Amino acid sequence: MAIKAAKGKLPYFASMTAYGSAPITAALQSSNLELLPVELHHALASAALPQHHKDPFDRVMIAQALAENMVLISSDGTFARYAGLRIMRA
Image 1 (tube, rainbow, N blue to C red):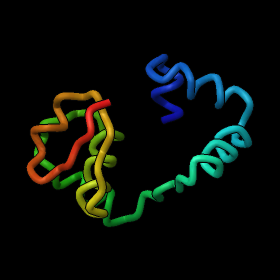
Image 2 (cartoon, one colour; image 1 turned 60 degrees about the vertical axis):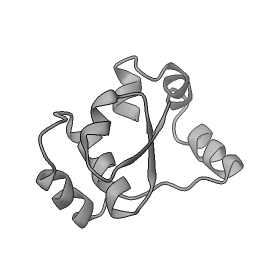
Image 3 (cartoon, rainbow, N blue to C red; image 1 turned 60 degrees about the horizontal axis):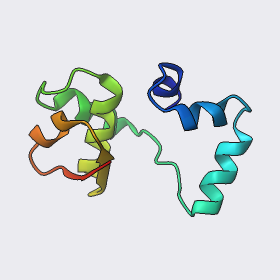
């Protein structure tokens, strides 16, 4: 998310990152969300995915969502090409 924020794709998140990790930690705690660590099996699964999406970070998120049976929230229409991926449109 920090890389996407730096590219101007997540302006609200970018304003939070300008102050370091404390605002992000506070937002996660207040929203009752947890960070999902990237594990080795996620990285390996991302490499095995069909090449529908070229962004390696997005591919890791797709692999995580599939491996952990989670819903991925995105406005990226390319994600729908991955069989079994549950998506909530942002």
